[in-house]
Image (cartoon, rainbow over all chains, first blue to last red; front, side):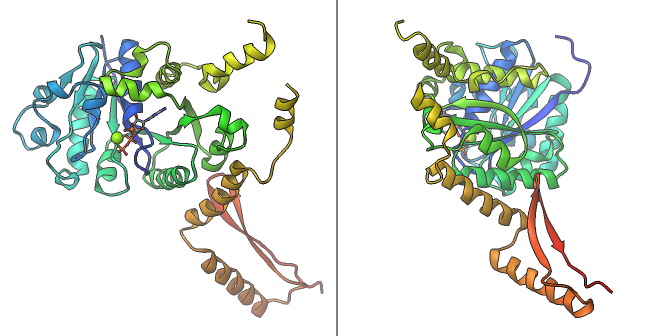
Length: 269
Length: 83
Ligand SMILES: Nc1ncnc2c1ncn2[C@@H]1O[C@H](COP(=O)(O)OP(=O)(O)OP(=O)(O)O)[C@@H](O)[C@H]1O
Ligand SMILES: [Mg+2]
């Protein structure tokens, strides 16, 4: 693929741990690669890496990002190619090191090199607001904030958005993960509207709660390969919106909404 | 279907979703200000005192925190005494 302009560097962050950053990075980057874009994912969760497992690439890792920075190998040697998606590469995190062994400046240098080759550089950010977060946002020009419809996750997301704004981020978008429409309808879960009203940033996508996420992660396969999974179209839509395509927020990206509607309109079927 | 419509239009103030929204509204306002409720109260009081010590006011000046998008603002309303 021809590439003449610099690639976009997107950090995926949340503040609170376990809300779905790594799942989002793995699936959105796979979806973009499947669309034909050249994509690299950089795991900056140093010391607690998971992206290699979620992508199912753990057995192919030879070098890691700290070794690249310390000059033990080249950047090219450390990149792991995904066999399922020929345009997708991963730069692994180091597992036995600390987050403060690398600096924001070093991450910027690496991203600069990656931007020359790739159209999208995704950074999987560790939880928290310490050194690892600062490293992850240093080189990015846009941010995806992942949250869950849950008070503590929203509070942390708000804090992160504030920090991104004071670091001059202009492009900050929201991904709501693990939404359960039936609970929202029953008045027992914050809705999409509630979240965008509290956080006051644009919505990039909504991913429903889906057991298939755990199953896919067990297998080390991105969920977008399972066309039947509820979360699959959600991640595909996020990828398409990132490319600039206008994708309607149909049915809150939840196919079960249609099933329910069909059932209430045509009860006999 | 009736059930569905009822749920759509009734706003159940005691639902856990409503509770979550109320709590978030409060906590986010204070988080964004980087300050506690108590400090806000002190601030309000001091602002009012400063104003009242310099100008003659008609009634009680009001100081409120209002939200404009992601920013909060202090909304100060001072009824001045006519001449
Ligand atoms: N939409 C979903 N439905 C069901 N389970 C989900 C969903 N999204 C994520 N999970 C599960 O939640 C857990 C945490 O997800 P993930 O590792 O992506 O979060 P994270 O934000 O990267 O966590 P950390 O802060 O530890 O890096 C995983 O076990 C994952 O399978
Ligand atoms: Mg993670």
